[in-house]
Figure (cartoon, rainbow, N blue to C red):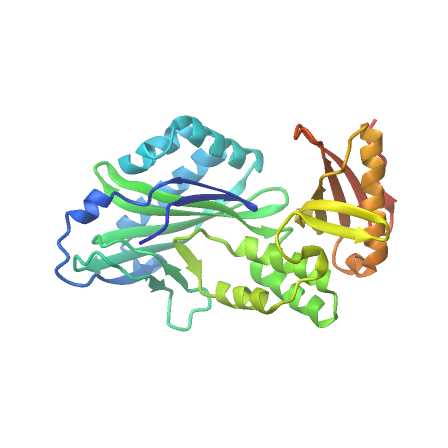
Length: 346
């Protein structure tokens, strides 16, 4: 059975509603195995495809424009029952702040048609051919028709993917689940980042490779219900890769440079001005002032660059963000390779 609805903003995720009514499935007698086939894009009858595309595009625009009431109305009743409107509003705010979005369009539409009423259904492969490198595996329910629609969009530094799972309801197609996730940073999609990671690993630049592999995995996500077949190659490469000490195990990480030790909560990549920046969130032991936090940021970045000069070959900047002990905010310091530290504001 497909997993619950998942909203993903970068690495942040929130499970918020069930996939489909259990009662609806229970009404189907398990007399025969559920067997399904998948049609994609132009192979779908135009009227059905247009209805699915219009529903998914409207959902994407409502999410991007922070219209939780409209998103709520588009959901199946069972989906609406599993989340408060306030929580949905928080999710639409998270999506809205990463915009504005442009070039919103449908990338692919998948129609899964099934027969049989078996309670257990299997994932179905969807693609234009058996050798299609962009095939996807989709989770299914034992219902006659179901759609997946992937909508793509672009923001200042990122590309985005919204995958909607749609089933027929009382008022036409309704949203059973959706996933919103970054799909590229500074024009580099998951497979691009994975290729860069492999090249860095081959040169012995383990920290560069680890950061790139992490970003590749994040950009490959399309939610728990739709998985690109090519994602398996990235997952296998990450599983076989030995991360450097800085990113081994689970966070928080302890980065030691000589006598200095930093408690790093998160290290990853962001896109900016067409380049890839390393961003590090960490928790200083104390916070006497913003000036002291800036000095601590500079000490961390200076030590990191000294220990890993190869970072300059893959990334444009390093951003260190000191987290206030009371959790009320962050103080950021930016270091640009070739130019040094940016002047603090004020």
